[in-house]
Length: 360
Image (cartoon, rainbow, N blue to C red; front, side, top):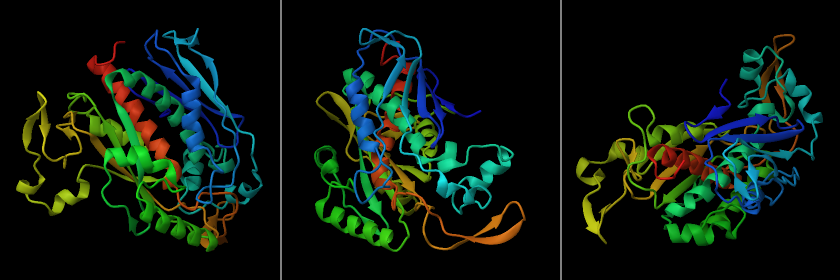
């Protein structure tokens, strides 16, 4: 059973895309911390569908309901349960795909694993809607990380073959929410939005990537050798549907670099050890270095497209053709920006608790 993640800050996700609710149980949250539910709602609002032409037309309010673990506005130390209700549900488009699995989705693999008993509506447990759970848990984690000065910001790095130039943390913080594709570089954002709209009109979709910067992360977070900061961040990010690659710092570019180019030289600034570059993405030996943690998640193109695709009928075991209906994002990356941010935040808090940087 893989619905729980974390060692101290333990997050359990539950619910299905077209069920009554999706929700999260957070265990291990220390007592006595003020919890601002409005700020959790604000993060859900950022993830909410139906906000622009770059997202699905499903229109969910996504109002968070707090069921347990908080009294008098402060955490009690008991498990915290939060849910949002599924209201704008239309399952009619999924009757055909129950027996004709959609290419690129988990329909077939889930059918095999669960013997055909899984909830297929809207993708069930494998829908992007489940990421609301990541957002709720991460939005809570961000509040507990604030006393450390930790800030987490993400943005759309590329869509299709359009890539944003280098972005500073200040630019990302100030400009990411200024456009529907959540790219802080204005000219690039306009090109991205045009490409997404063209893909939507063609009944197709585009892939993309989201870059996340975690600022002021204390050095020494991470538990080598198997529970490294990179490893746990990667595991959490791979739980986000459609993520197919995760890389840190220079990532795959390291393969074409020399050691003299790749190494980050040390220096002292303001009485603290820093590096003059950050090719390692703020992590060395699986532990945070004190430099900004830089991680990118690459998302495959949305597999639900209106173009005819080959599939099979699981009842007859004959080949078939499928055109996917329903309401879907033409590109996942823009809506995934708050998901990536909050997923990173919940892992950072887990490691900060393990290291004693946040008091249990």
